[in-house]
Image (cartoon, rainbow, N blue to C red; front, side):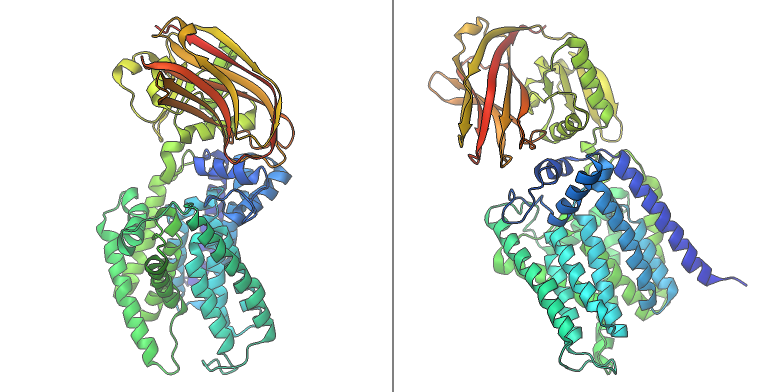
Length: 603
């Protein structure tokens, strides 16, 4: 006899194990992208992630920074170590997905929902990143489980875990604040309106639940709300849109989940329309029943949508988009399959089968361990860094390396990890014709491309490392030394000089600087900047190196080396200034300060 129960037990277990192994492999081999690097240097490595005290930026997913910092202290700096908390969060989510089986009326519907949650590659990718999204999804799903389990069983411990998980979710990713408030409100209502007959009647809540509600939910959420408004007031909630909920959230997520992966744009519209019909039918039937039994996931999704729209209109908060809105995907899928489970008809079941089948095909076509789909143009494998270090060893000097800000951040992480002692010379491709190496994902003009050979190429991301066929011969023009300094200086000058001494207005210009630095507060936002002016003191050019990348851990004295490529200066250039910019005037000291101005006639 065919044992369906064995399928319901073993198939999802096998899928969970294989997908966890797959995500772990991705956490090992997929290169970090720029947001992860910023998280590492700014919050994880320094340990300065405390809200209201740390560098203010939406990049600080506080609980992720906390867990990653602990993992970093115990195990090191490798990608899998930094991403380990999110990989473990995937295990936690799978545990709660299994627990949800007891809350579905039909095992087949639970299995379809499980597969949809597990196989969607866009959602799955967040569990391989050193960011807070995967953590928040796992905690949010766990909290919804405890809400529904409490409504069904009345066991006293469910609200305690539910309130705790909601606060963990919001401090992993502030974007889920509206949804955690929706779940927490429903959970508090369930605690206040439940009796032994499992009917919705007001009663005095259990004192344990009152304490848990205040300590584990209210207090953390008040701080989360205050922190969110501080981010908004300082312009740090930069990932959002004001183009309406449908375009910013629904269609944007539909594109990321379906269209970008090769499916037609009509699929999400059809699915959302069917969900709306199922939700409307289910709500009408639930309110008509006695006692009223509305499905919690429907209300959570509804309140999340209404609350997000209300925040936009009342407080001017932009609609979340892309990854900031990704938590709507698990809420949507849960509401959809609860509706299918309660409707239990052929059309609903057909929709339920199509989604996991589509996600499965999508998964097998997109699975890889080389790049993150949503940020594939930032994928820089370690081989690129090794080529750069080999060039330095062969030539006996730091290369003048040109790339963009995203790839520069990733190279800074590799330099921290492997200690090769390189630095990006410029984040402007404009001066690439005089560079030793260029790393880019865009096609350079043909006259520039003809000067270079391809050293390495990453097929998936399109990132290419180019090496100049004939390296420029650089000659020192002037050398500058500065006295040691300490204090809260915003600017520390290295070079202030006219350009007459160059004796070659068509020559390329570069600067090499070095110094040792120390700061008890690890300054956030410090740069090595060179500015070029004309004879009327008008600024005509700026090149800056972000010293936060790779040099955030200066609690102890650390040597910093900087190479800057200015390229061929405009004819009107008259003089230049080169200095360290300590943006927040943090306390720090500098010693052994020296810089060299170089020129070269490149062929």
